[in-house]
Length: 172
Image (cartoon, rainbow, N blue to C red):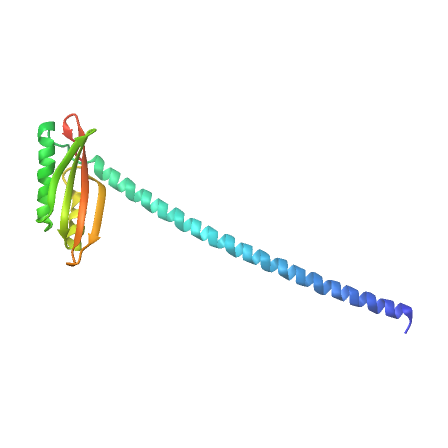
């Protein structure tokens, strides 16, 4: 063997080794790119899901705002708090919460605030809260506390407010 043949074998081995190392580096870079693409794809899917959920919530809010705009007006100022209180008592008894205590807390800053507290079966409480959607006046829950009690019922406290204008409680 000549030095020229030895040199060409060494050069050939070096070239082959360089090609193998280069291919390994390329595969490693390709795997890194695939991982990055997978992470970006997952982030894009999560972003799309969050955007869809936000759009759904916005549509629900617009629906409820539309319901509030078309509601009847409330009675005149002296009668408004009493009529709201009476309607609240009717809703409480109609939903099986006869043992609940309903009290007018205050009228402050144009808002009449009422409190309903007691204990009842959870399904009856849920039914009462759902009935507030069809309440004859615009009512807003400002505080809701629910706690399980040993009797299998739930102890609850709900603060419900209605906005009062110059002519009384503003209807829906």
